[in-house]
Amino acid sequence: MPVEATQLVDDVMRRWPTTIRVFLNHRMHCVGCPITCFHTVADACREHGVDQVKFLSELSAVIKGQAVTSPESGPKAIVARWPA
Image (cartoon, rainbow, N blue to C red; front, side):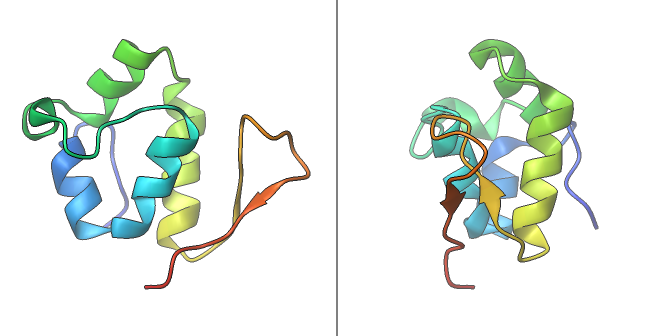
């Protein structure tokens, strides 16, 4: 099942822990936030001003085990994949 904008942030991070890095790369400090069990991915993107389509694409890439570029470091910087 691919990640969707309607899924709760907490559910996404618990099911696919490797996605935590994507949240952090976008300066979304959702890890440990009490609202993650109420906010969907779409809510989090809207609250943090993150492009939802791009963000979902990055989440999907990490879930599939692919490297993702970091938005802060530019397109050449690759973020290491966390061990599964």
